[in-house]
Image 1 (cartoon, rainbow, N blue to C red):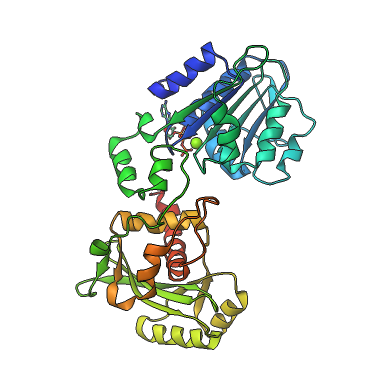
Image 2 (tube, rainbow, N blue to C red; image 1 turned 45 degrees about the vertical axis):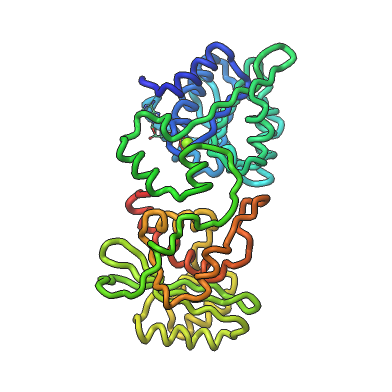
Length: 399
Ligand SMILES: Nc1ncnc2c1ncn2[C@@H]1O[C@H](COP(=O)(O)OP(=O)(O)OP(=O)(O)O)[C@@H](O)[C@H]1O
Ligand SMILES: [Mg+2]
């Protein structure tokens, strides 16, 4: 089995330094989980036939299957069947599988003695769960392996473990060893694939985290790749539209907003028009939609789900109103990727509020979330784009 140079470095550290807690953090697709699984199976094998307990933890059962168990099946060449306690046997030991994303997830691991744990996507796990699992690993020689993508630098995985790289136990055994991966560390990826990921990953935080694997805070303007000179267009002449859809963000004190998006035959998207108004009731918005429909037909409206009564009203008016997918960071990343790849353009003369928001919509550096200001048109744009594109991404698996 061939390993990348970075993976070899990790394996060498385990062989020579034998840390109790091993943390692999960094870029997506960098080869972290691959080596984590190999090392963990090797660890379990050293206790062969002893009937001990081990843990595999991840955010949800489906992510654990996708990221860990399917690969283990391939390596050991047989199917894994979880029993009633969500456990399976391997090398004469028992592996308990826990989903650890919720605040009470830690209770599952209570009162348990384990000889090891593999924790997948550390930042997606609840901090209490991570700490409980680590404290359960009290069997002699127990080892904890955590893999994770970077997040905010104040995240407990970073502050409590990665920043304590090199820490030793009283016995002298190395307690924590942390490794940092970049996308370029995975030398087995097709260079064209790497090139396309780099070219389509939005600038700023997304590139720093997903490509360089750095624990950086979100800061500054959110849509850093928006460029007036490239992304504003004067007219729609010569564009061959194949589809239209719309996004809706309800607002009263804040601006309510509806945007209409067009998709052309080359996979480009166009913000065709914006309707942003304060202090308007639902009857007003129904009229706006009727007028939009008179020009674009019976298109989908992807709506903020916060006001179900408004969506009901739209549906009574025979408007194709659908709950939008509101995942904030993933949605922003999708819109930002379109700007980065020059696949989202805006008809300059049809937008007013967008022109302000795009330069004023910023990250809150403390929470890592967007500041909830100057986001009304941009939220409706995000709902439209992300909800429309997500099923396509699932079908093709493309990035
Ligand atoms: N040594 C290797 N030999 C062959 N393929 C490898 C090797 N290391 C990693 N890969 C493959 O590269 C891809 C990415 O690896 P892996 O899933 O370990 O990345 P990751 O760092 O966990 O990424 P993510 O953060 O996205 O979960 C996988 O398809 C994996 O099978
Ligand atoms: Mg992984």
